[in-house]
Amino acid sequence: MKFSYKATNKEGHTITGIVDANSQQAVVGLLKKQGYQPIVISSERKKININLWGNKKVKLQDLVVFSRQLATMVGAGVPLVRSLSSLQSDTESLYLREILTSITKDVESGMQLADAFSKFPKVFDEIFVSMIRAGEEGGILDDILKRLASMKEIEASIRKKIFSAMMYPVVILCVTIVAFFGIVLFIMPKISQLFTQLGGPHAKLPIYAQFVFGSGTFLLSHSVIGLVPLINSVPVISKLPNIFLFTIIIGVIVIFLIRYIHTPKGRFWFDGIMLKVPVIKTIVSKLAIARFARTFSSLMGAGVNVLDALETTQTAIGNKVIEAELKYAAKEVQNGKQLSEPISQSKHFPPIVSQMLMVGEETGQIDAVLPKIADFYEEEVGVTIDGLASIIEPIMIVLLGAGVGLIAASIMGPIADLTKVVGNN
Image 1: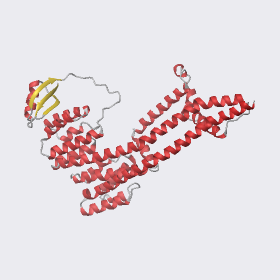
Image 2: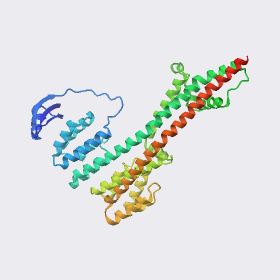
Image 3: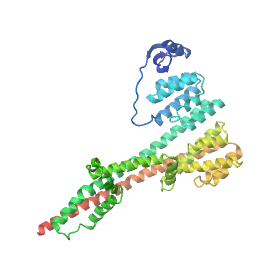
Image 4: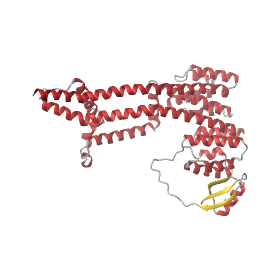
C-alpha cells in the first residue's frame, strides 16, 4: 500500500514523498530509521494512469539534473538512501518521482544501486547502469556520477542544438509542400478550365504555369495518391475527398516506415543512409565518434575491462553501422589484437582515433587520452550545426521566395492572359 508523508530531516528542512508499506506504523519506523521526524502520513488512493502516447519517459534534462544532484550529495558524504529520498521529493517529473520511490525502497532493502536502476531500462540505459555498477565495485561512485552527469549534459546540449537547427527548415518545408499541393489540387485546375473555356480549345497556359501544374499532377498521379482508386471501392472511404485520402495514405505509409525503422534490419538500413547524406553524415559520424570516446574512456577509467567496455559502448554509439564495426573490433581484441588495429581499418573512424588509442595503449592512459578526442569532435559537431543553421536560413528564404514567385506567376500569368483575350473579344 502506498503512503504519502511529510517529515523533517536533521537540518529541520521539510521533505515529502511516497513509500510502499503495510501500515502507517511501518512508515513511521521507516522514516525514523532514515533520521526523519514524521509530521503527516496519509494513504494514497490507487490511480488509473491512462497513457495515450505509449510508454512513459523522463526528459533528458530531468535526468541531467538528477545525475548532477546525486553526484553532489554522494560526494558530500550524504547516505545514498537519504540522497535518493531527498531527490525524490525535489524532482519535478512525476514519473521520475515514482521511479525514485521504487529505487529508494530497493536500495534500502539491500539491493545494489545499479540493480535498482536496471529495473528501468527506458530511463537508465545500459551505459548508465554499467558505469554505476563499476563505480560501486570500485568505491568511486561519486566520481562516476559526476562523469555521468557531464555526459548527459553534453548529450542534452547537442540534442538541443540539433533540434534548434532543424526546426526552422522543417517548418518552412512543410508549409511550402502543403501550399504547393493545395494550389495544384484546388486552384490550378479551375484556372486551366477557365482558360480553355474563354481562350478556346487551342489556348495553352504559359510555360511556367504548365510546369507547375504538370509537375504537381505528375507527383500526384505517380505517388501514393495513385492508390486512391484502389480504396475508393470501400463505401465509407469513397465519400471522402481525394485530399483526405491522400493525407490518410501518407500517414499510414509514415507509420509503417517508422515501425520498420524500429526493427533491427530497418534501423541498420536507415543508419546506413544517414552515413551517405552530405552534411548529415558528417554530424552523425562525428557524434558517434565523440560518444564512443567519451563512454569508452569513462568505462575504462572506472576499471571495466576492454571487452566489457566495448560491449557496453556499442549501445551508446547511436548508429548501427558503426556499432557493427565496433563488434568486429571487439572480436579482434578477443583474438589478441590491440583495439587500435581494427579501429585503424574502419571506414568511419578517422586515423586520429586509432593513433590516440595506440598512444593510450602504450602509456596505459586510454581514459586520459580519449576524452580529448571526445572534446574535439563534440566541438566540431557544435560548430557544424551552428554553421549549418546559419546557412540553412538564407537558403530556405531564397528557395521559398523562388517557389512562391513561381506559384504566384503561374496563377497571375494566366489571369493576365485571360484579361487580354476577353478584352480582344
